[in-house]
Amino acid sequence: MPKARAGAPELIGDPVPLNVELHDMTPELARKVPEAKSHQFYVTADAIVLVSRSDRKIADVIVIK
Image 1: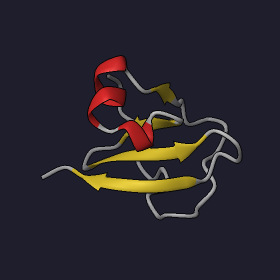
Image 2: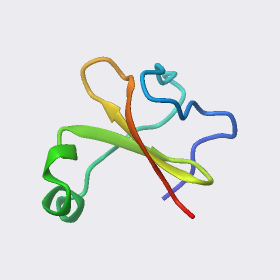
Image 3: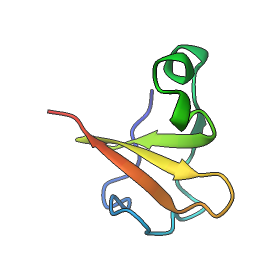
C-alpha cells in the first residue's frame, strides 16, 4: 500500500486534503475492527490514519512502531 506524502495530517479532527488518497477498509480489517468499517484510511511512515467518510476529518490514528 502506498504511503501518504510526508507532512500529511496525523492529528484527530484535522481535515485531510483532497490530494491524500484514501482507501476503503478491507473485509478482513472490517471484521477485526467493526467500528472502523465505516471509515477510510491512509498510511504514513509511522501510522495508519482513520478518516471519516462524511467530512474527511481524522477520526483516529494508530501508531505503527
